[in-house]
Length: 577
Image (cartoon, rainbow, N blue to C red):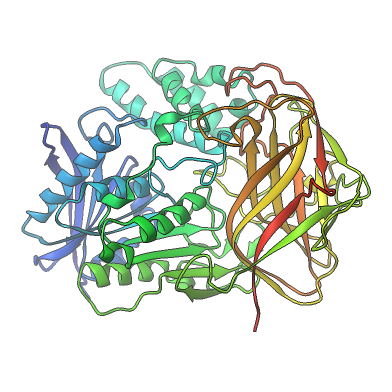
């Protein structure tokens, strides 16, 4: 263990086009050569020093690693222009040049890995596809490969939580640069602080594209980019070339992270399409019970016990074991998959995902024609429906269903994410609840979950949401997984296809991956509605582009569960010994 550290807060790295990137190096104080872990980031290093990252600085350096924090173009002292729509190859080339510069330094032994979450995770995939000779492994957290946005990996509405949070993060550095150029930013900062303190000023405003607090040159452009992150964005939907990646990866994700589906897909795609046998056989995945955040014990309303937090989960230690194996060459056996089962609150290892013993079971939606609210007669069972009446509700964009937990974004914006009691949501008549009988034995659900929903609408475009819920004997009901689909993007992420009013369509709503033990005495519930606001922008039911409408149209929604039009949830049930 190395007990002293050296910090160089002012390094400058020249890119192939002459652009200089700024950064800092934290390394063991012995002055020797060590492997280096790189974080290439658009965010301030305070996020790392402040403990908001999966990696522990002191633990990493004491274990004999250098930690390099380098800022991407146009951010925090780095030259050039930062663009959210930056070409993958430009940022990838910067990664290549940065890695090879680090490898040439006297304090680096030539073995380099990368780590970081969210945007930092996406950047790692861009680096890996460029194959810099000294990059030996990456550990992207809370992010899958760039592009790869399609109905299988990404929710088709805009995640407003992420859009607003991202704008506020990026605006800080943008305004700092304006200050440096002698421009007055006091008024703009005051308006942005209003949204920071009360995000509803932004997400409640209609039309969404004209939020007054964002109506300034530069800020308006950033907002338009953020609003364009949903379906219809062709540039973010291009397939990623996994065949170009030839190194081991550790994908770190969590059950309540909005990017978890993409993380799982990237893991699977690397096993199937990685650039060589070595890469395909050395893929790893770590999935915990958290949100878009570092490991913590209490998430939402649930205390997941001592094995869920940073110390108990040993997430940082697991990361270091990964780098010990691939940067230091230590003989360490790492499982392909390590995941946390909620309800059991324990960690488990697996060789593949989904688990090889998975029993895919359909649970069908039933009712006597009034599944509205948790007080209705909606039922969930393994029996297929026969001739049953339809269920209907009115989705009014001016009165959307308010977010209650689920897959959180970059910042919480006043909302609690993760598992949250659904009592207030499930009392609404525009929420359909289908509940199983009391379970006579434990049921473990581990793997990807999806709902097949036969539905029609009185409008040409609308949204449908589905939520898997664990109902406790005392009446509490906690969300386990959720998903949403925008009707016009039901078949393609980039090619809209409006509905015909009244036409019955089978929607596939992907709820993502989870691992949940439903205890005996509990019930399994599926909630169906048409909004989850403000996590996602509300569909105004007009078919117009996001942000254009000042008014919406109420939609009469019809859910079918009968012969020929069965609606059901597919659960990956794991046999219990």
